[in-house]
Image (cartoon, rainbow over all chains, first blue to last red; front, side, top):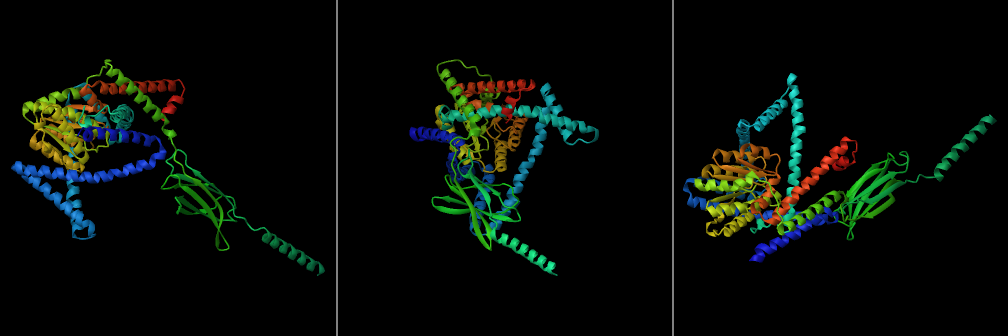
Length: 209
Length: 382
C-alpha cells in the first residue's frame, strides 16, 4: 500500500520532474517533450469519467438525503444526460436532429447562462470597490484617490485630459513596479515549490508530511 | 553602286557574326544555394538560402524544391517559385523528426523542360544545451544549491526566522469561528489543473486545513473544477483526517466535482454558499474572472474569507473583498509556514536570500546606470 500510494508516485514525480527540467534546457529532447505533452489529453479524457462519476454520485446522494434541494440536483442530472446523449449521438449524425439539439442547447442555453454569471461581476466589482474605499485608513484613501484618477483618466476630455496623463503614469509606473515585485516573488515561489516537489522535500500533495 | 554593295556585305557579315556569337555562348543559369541546420534548436529546423547569379533578363525565375529524407522516406516540403531580383532569400524549413536530411534543389525552365541546376543538403541536429537559457540555468543551479544548504542547516537545528503572515495565522481562527457557529468550511483549490504549481501549493494548504477541521469535527466541503485535482484533493483530505485521528469523519462526497466550466463552477459554488452558509471560505489557488463572484458571495453570507492566488490580475479583487489575502509568493510559503518543518522552512529562507540577491543586482544596475555604466542594466533587460 505504501509503495502504491507513496513511493511510486514520489518516484514518478522525481523522474518526470527531472526529465521536465532536462527537456527545458536540452533542445534535442524537444521531441520527447511533445510526446509527454500529448499524453495530457489522454489523461484528461480518462479524468472526465472521474468527474462525471463524482458529479452523479454527489447529486444522487443529495436527491436522497436533501429533499428541499432535490430540484437542483434533478435539473443538473437531466442537463448532464441530455447534453451527453445529444453530443454523442450528434457526433455520428452530422446535421441531424441531435446535432441541432446540441448546438441549440449550447448556443441558446449554455452560452447565455455563462454570460449571465459573468455579468454579475459588474455588480460585485461595485460592492467590493465600495467596501475597499470606505475603510477609514490613509491607505484606502490613497486607493480611492488613485482609483478616481484612473477612472477619470479613462474618460477624460478637454481640460480634464491632465487626468489622462496622470492615469497613464499611475498605470505605467507605480502599478507596474508593484506588479513586477509580485511577479519576482511568485516566480521564486513557483521555482521553490517545484524544486521541493522534485527533490521530495514537499509531500503534502501525496497526503504525507 | 559598288560602295553600297560593299557596305551591305559588311553589315550582313557583322550581323551574321553577332548572331553566331550568341549561338556559341548560351546562358548558363546559376545560383548560390546554401542549406544550414538551425543551431540551438530541437533538431527539426533548417534554413535554405538561395542567391540568384543571373540577370533577371537571362533567368527571370527559379524553382526551389525542398525535401526531407528520414529513414529512407523522401517527402516534398516546399515547392517555391523564386522571382529573380538578385537578392539572397531565406526560406525556413521545419521537419517532423530530428536527424532528418533536408535537401534543396533548384530548377530552371530551359527549352520547355525543367532542368536541375544546383542542389545542397544538410542533416538537422538537436542541440544539447540551449545557450539562450544559460542565465536561467545558472540561476536555477544557484537557487537549488542555496535550498540544499539551508535545508541541511535547518535539519541540523539552525534557527530560521520567518515573518508573520496574517492570512495563515488566521486559518485557526477561521476554522474555530466556523466550528463555534456550527457551519461548514468551504475550500476551493482554484480552478486550474494539477499542472499549475498554484494548485499544488493550494493542495498542500488543504492538508493543514483538513487536519484542523478534523480536529474540531467541523464539516469541510471542497469544490473542484478539475477531475484530476478532485482525486488528489480527496486523497489529501482523507490523509489529513487520518493523521488527525478522525478517519470516521471523512466523507468522500464532501470533496466533489462541482462543474467543469468556469462560470458553471462559479454558479455551483455560489449556490452552495448561499444554501449552506459556510462559516469560513478558503479560496486558494489559481483563479480568473470568477474570483470576485466567489469572494463577494462568501462575503454576503457572512463567512470569514482567506484567499490567495498568484494571478496578479485577481489579487486586487481578493484584497478588496476578502478578510485576509495571501499575496503571490505567500501562497507558496504557506505549506512551510503551517507545518514549520525545518526542511520546508529552509526552502522559504532560500527564497528570501535569492530575492535579496536579485534586489542587490537591481540596485547595482540602477546605480551604475545613473553614473553612465550601462552594461549591467543592458544585460538584465536583454
